[in-house]
Length: 214
Image (tube, rainbow, N blue to C red; front, side):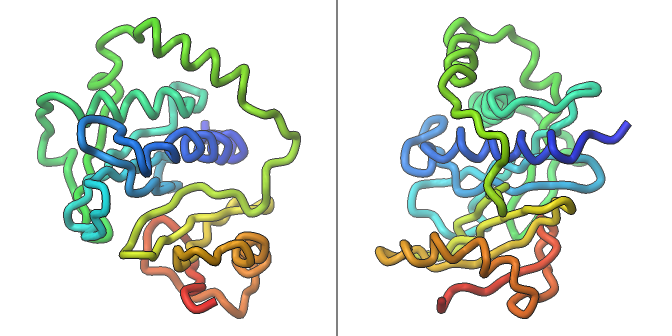
């Protein structure tokens, strides 16, 4: 049975929120989050991209692909975070079919049995509980909502946003500067303007919008 698209979107939003602090603070060892890439086909997943702080060469990135399906339900953001931490630390052996490339970076397909072998620690369970208590509740998520991002170069970032009933993901290339307040307020409408969109060569989004000079 296909997963509910709304549940998939919420899991992707939640995971992005949880991983944002690790853009500037290490997630594991000396690895930082350099991106979160939404995957919708053939099965929903998230690719969490790790690399060094200040690294913009995508060839040096490693993306850990975690499936969102957990039986008939959707895996939580906390479970995805733990999967990435456990998979990116220590010694792991992967088969040739588990390793590939996308956008020039290495992609490792992580199997549930590779991170679910050990029970969650007390701190992991407590953290999940506290996150559920503290997470603000809103009936309607922002539209478009951010389902992922990727650092593509110095002062450059691709934002993966989706909104509406179709859940179609649009990639927006933006310049990271000290004058982003205007872009922040205008981004929702700019992303959804058809005349700005072009066909995408990025498998994580249906269309692309160039806002680097906006």
